Image 1 (cartoon, rainbow, N blue to C red):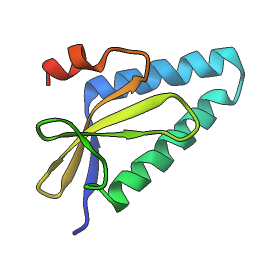
Image 2 (cartoon, rainbow, N blue to C red):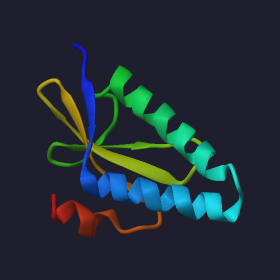
Image 3 (cartoon, rainbow, N blue to C red):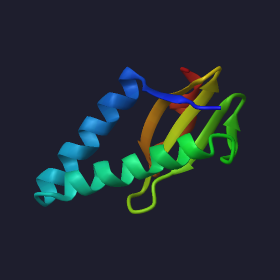
Length: 98
């Protein structure tokens, strides 16, 4: 089955904030963050059910080079990304609102 990836508004905001944070620290680091995130998205699309559940219906995949996790849900033929959070952020408070 082929899935399409949809990134929710909240996740988009977090991605932009992280990109800007890293790029402000060192020019080009934001692009490295985006590349790492895109690699994570590709792994999710290839094996969407490989990652563990952190809540009913919500799975978590980690980026490889940055301390960020992607929280997503498989819905029919869509992988919906709810959150992209730094691993030090409390995901429980965010997950309650999904």
